[in-house]
Image (cartoon, rainbow, N blue to C red; front, side, top):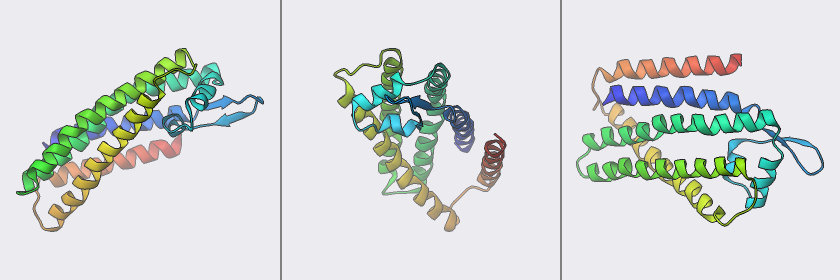
Length: 196
């Protein structure tokens, strides 16, 4: 199980780094011609659909290409992110008695969060092609909030429980190797980010 976690975590980490580098190119021109930088969170939590369309319409060709690439790379990120949370929940579930079904439920809910994230990306890709207000913005907002609530619930329940297992000595010795590899990967990713 730890091997699968390490593989999904590696995919998540390095696609996140890739998206971070693409995000440096994000900016749009407002109605006054002023260049305004934005982040992916600005697209996920706009004040209105009109604001989202304004950002999309004001993208330069380079920024539009970077945003499109970011959204496609995000599909790879999802393939590492949601399984990582689900695997953590399953690992913790095996170590608990009463809470086993709760953690398995949290793991299963990551599939719903993954689906919502894919629907969110599909909406953004459609808006990139045709940035005009429509009737599906409330669905988009639902996908964004539901995705965040479900994945944060999984992380917020699994990580503290996992630390508790470590503190009480309830862990497998070979997990130390995987933990070391994950720490090394994080340090490499931070070094790459600092150099870029």
